[in-house]
Image 1 (tube, rainbow, N blue to C red):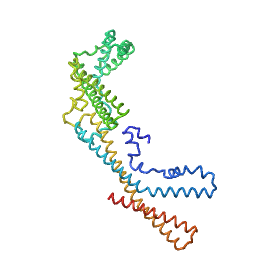
Image 2: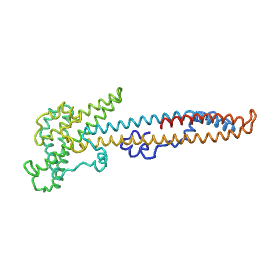
Image 3: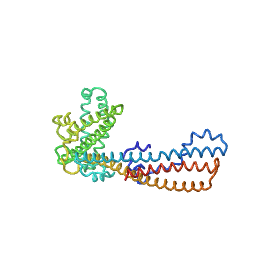
Image 4: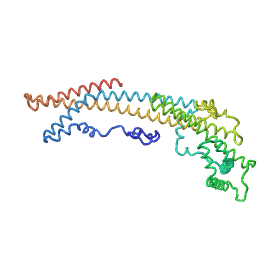
Length: 399
């Protein structure tokens, strides 16, 4: 049962609940039967051998009678529960398709095929763009270093002290300088050559590529956070109240704050290399619009949705589809089990009837062993008749 704590992607790949023909049977019926005899262990341990066998046989007969009497109701309950779960899973699958279409993901099967591990590798920057990125890192560090005293005023408390400590650390600048040298070598800039500057065409091309890359990266992060927040809101609605609901509410508020921060960073990169003009791109109205799934960079119905939307809904679609298939197979297994139980009851009833007829021909007297066997067989035949009637009624309802 610990497998239920694993991520859904892991369960779909490894769990017996979703593997073909795996997990359809318990496979430990003998162990379960002996476990039911545990209360008798303290009694039979002091019995003689003959009384031990008699006591165990009587206990097993009692368990068999109870199981036969309850088997029809148990099977009916399992079939009803499976049918309800199957309908719920189909409803979830329909809701996922409708919600995905609202976010521009109209081909969920194609989106599911994109979930291969190789597709998760992000696009890499060119050597020139990486060189410009390293120049910006080093320049930003130097700018903060020159204003490190003012940082403690602008950022009071532990935040200003932490930033001051980072920019004043010479090892960090040396690391950024070494990174810049490696990027320059990869971009073909020699040791004796001057670094690229904003006025050079190479710098402008690398900066434009870096800007586009960062914008796409931030947009995907924002969408992933928005979809994660929607899942948390759905879980909170199901929890209704209690500690789980309160915890989910805190996480929802935290995700909203993170989304607002990412929108602010995106606004800065959108205006790059200029400064962001105003805060309208990440104010409360912009955050609410993004949290509702209305992104300003959306494709407006073109294509099959954004990458983050395709990945989010493809995972939900794969999970919902797997659950529908799983309960559909279980319904088939239960139907086969019903037929098997009906055939078994018929065969057992025929065997008991034959044995009962043979004993009655002997005309045993009262108190004899044969008379006792006839009494036991009559009770067993009655139980089998009740079981056959329950299964027949169940098969009629399933037809």
